[in-house]
Length: 119
Image (tube, rainbow, N blue to C red; front, side, top):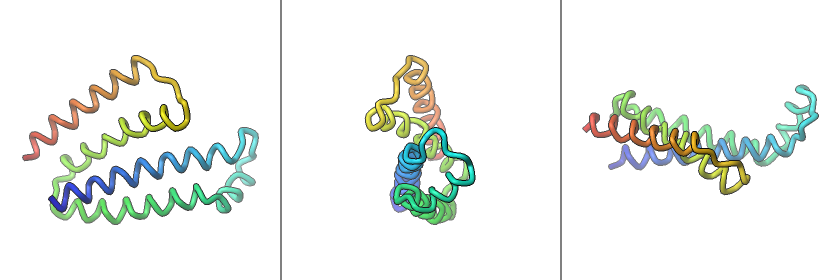
């Protein structure tokens, strides 16, 4: 059970990091030049939050891989590809399309199949 808890931390921290990267990107503005944008990123709390979450992701991920086959663990991380768009729809009012729904269903089925194989 410890592994699944750590895997949940990996997924949640990855999702949170992605959402904070989006927030930071929105704070840059569309016309920022690359150099000033990089400098500005260092001052944004959302960016620092994302970096911290990614650091947590890395540490928890290495811990997961001590006891879980990479093929099984990595397939579970594919849930990020479902959770991020769902939360982006809710938080950022991003559009929903039939392709997005179909893709989420297919990813879910794939994760389930690999997880069942990994038992």
